[in-house]
Length: 138
Image (cartoon, rainbow, N blue to C red; front, side, top):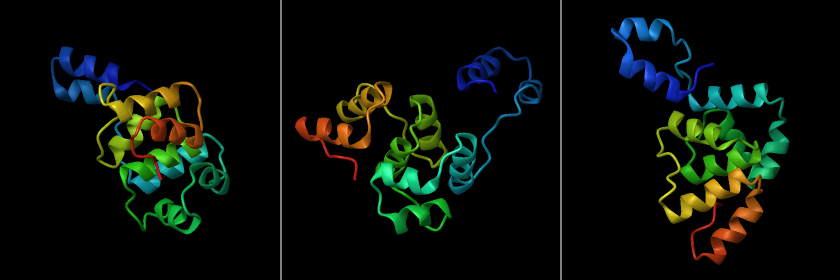
């Protein structure tokens, strides 16, 4: 699978859009629910364990997985920690739902990026956010 950066390079250097997309079949054309199911399957995760690690209320989390609820950016971030996603995977998940990616020059986002990069869990992240006077991920 090609990265977003590789697609950007192809788009900038390609002679025709049709040629570019013919060499890049990995466009994300999934609903959030479908994409979450894809991640769960690919990483061989159990939803119950993901939900427990995310700190999201169980019923609400299952509604997100079924596509019955549209989660906030915070809830998606919590699920990301529950699934132990990489920064790149989190950025993709946020984009799939139409949310802004994490931005390193934003103080709160930079703390989230740091936590993801260091393999911290949601509790460690929230402790850091709280100590900085930033809103926690609930």
